[in-house]
Amino acid sequence: MPLDLYPHLSPLEYNKLNPERLTEEFVYFAKDKSLPIETLMAYYRCVIMEIETKFYVLNEELSLEYDRNPIESIKSRLKSWDSLVKKMSQKNLPMNIKSLEENIYDVAGIRIICAFQEDIYRLAEIFLRQDDVKLIERKDYIKNPKSNGYRSLHLIVEVPIFLQNHTRYMKAEVQFRTIAMDFWATLEHKLRYKKDLSEAESEILSEELLICSQMSAELDKRMQTVKNKISAEER
Image 1: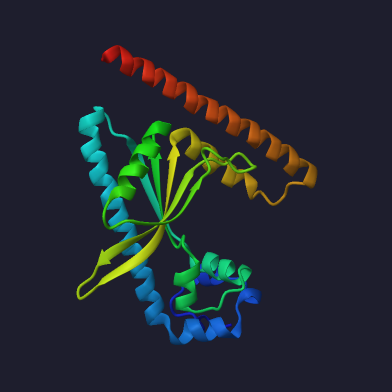
Image 2 (image 1 turned 90 degrees about the horizontal axis):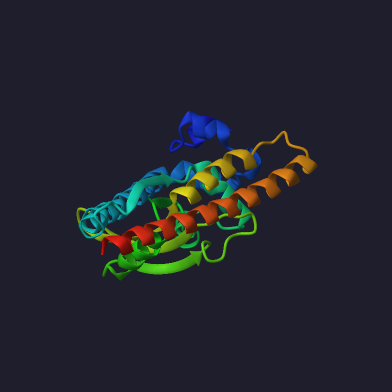
């Protein structure tokens, strides 16, 4: 599989690809439709910028009301072609642009890190009230954590991007976490993919991570209680 079949891939991305997952259909898709692929990925970068701007504006406005910034940091990422190909292959999806747009909702991802859990729900509510934000899907892993202890609020939204000659609606995933949730999830991701662990070691790791998640949740709860007490005394 020569690199020139994949003009949209960097050498690093090309080297990461698993050749067994690349069907003849995708080879054609990658070779002859690289310009639409590049354009589509540019649109996803635009929707990231659009959503980030919305939250920077909200953070500035709400800082006047809260006397603090409810948003600690904003992170974003665009899924690599390696990840997208694997995901489409696992879902048995046709390897074309239409299929990608209609079935893979987290190509563009924005993560909002907050100090307190109440900030998450307040920001999500305000964000979803905006006229040009359409909610596609909501998954609340804070109220209903995953079995491994993962906690976060996930929103799949559709937002317009305003291009030179037209407006285009793009989907993106917005994740909301507290600092504690993000700390746990980041370390869990690093530890989870250690490939040299035995089955027994992996099971012990899972148990430890679940306990750490419970401790993280308790920390969030207690910090919220402390904040509420301080706020009550200031009134």
